[in-house]
Image (cartoon, rainbow, N blue to C red; front, top):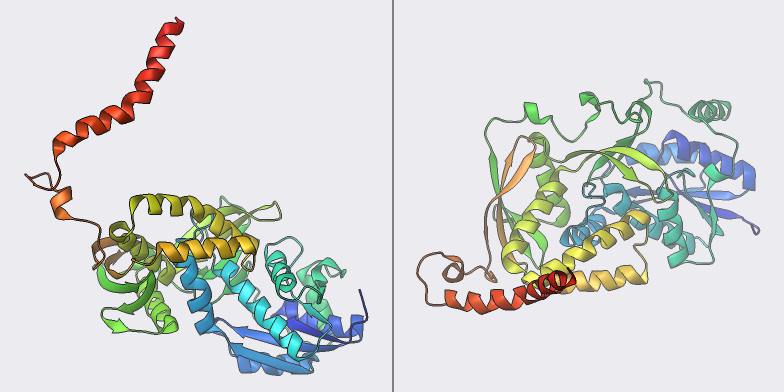
Length: 402
């Protein structure tokens, strides 16, 4: 690694990145600039700034990225119906490329020699950060302390922090790790490592348990324009306002909890517990509107792309040529996904109560079983015979073999 005089660190204010900040200063004898991304994690970022400066940062950048996060990352994923391994809406996966992008911008502005992150050598986040760094600034040097240092446990980090005067929370340690932004909260590790153990109720931060949700359903109307949600119950909202509102509605109704064992990009299986209340509502509502506005073959073709699109997000390839190609395809598929979905939200579930669109392809005259003038039922005879031809030929060939 070349001569390093200035490093920009993706900093959260937690134990790991606080120790990393001090360790970088000592290890590389370099100036360390802390970059803090506000993705709606609900922390006092002024306190984070003070802590970074006390720990040795020469400068602290704090950027409110909530609007960009929702508009340019969350909504595009929802338009694509992106779900990793059938369950995970990828709140953490979507946040990392944005953080890394802004970190690179700070590094360029500061003429920094390197960037650093606090991701471990076992997880997905190291890949997401570093693929983004390379895609946007290939020549930047990357420091991943967890792959370099000899601090291999939380106890070792705490000891290092105390030795260097870094404040360590005196509250009891949560027996699991937690990552939060305005799209979701994730929990893993510790008591959750045994996939047989049900997650304790007190870990959840965004949702009540479905059992404690209201006994009456909540109905809401969500308007979409070209696949993008724009209003709730007729009230136009900014992307951030809309997601906050749906998080509140979904949270009090116990919506959006997921408990899964997923396949990490590095080859390890990992148990994750997630809350994505507003995102779950939008995912269901979006598909409901697509059901009346998308051509059958376009929908089926698009659906074959969803697993790959989701995999690219999860693996960290947001800034890749294949992602650009897929996003262009998704954009084309959404041009008529405009209209309103009525969602019924009840005790952890979201269902479609109604859908309407000026571009609806659903025509009652065609779908009805009553007498009609548009569809000649007799035409189905030739249609069926032509589609059955290959089946009949196959059977004849098989019989002739005997």
